[in-house]
Image (cartoon, rainbow, N blue to C red; front, side):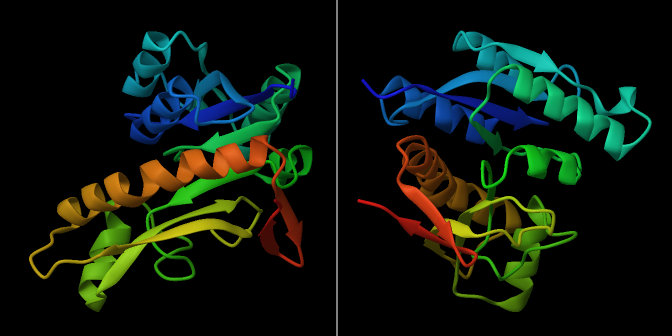
Length: 211
């Protein structure tokens, strides 16, 4: 039997992408992956309730308790390494981490971004800002991207992407919801499964799927 790959999900809010992962795990769709820890950047977020309801351990590592990004990143690294985590998933995690974490988990941190990278990504492009920018540009197609995380914002190797049609009557809120339902909640669990089953390889900043 394949070895179980322990997953930590980092959250800062409601945890809708966390729920997509929990649901995928419940139906056996994370392959050898198992969510063993959910870490919140502040107390009281609903994502922790989702974790508790699924019987998953939740911890709070509050950013406000640390005087610098470096100190917070070191504490996060030590926590995840100490728990034997194999894959780190950023699921609506809104706190900056530095290279200490990336060096400890090279090509073992993934993020889902609500646009088709390299469009509408980088500094300042998060949450509804992404969809506001897409609508302002008048794009006909948007979507979501799952990528490995590197020190440069939204610039890591792309694992999966899925396109979603933009409607003329869309608001940022309606587009956000459609992209979550049709793209994010589908490709994030799939990317996690591929990683945990040992089917992803990075070469020259590109991700290749192994059979």
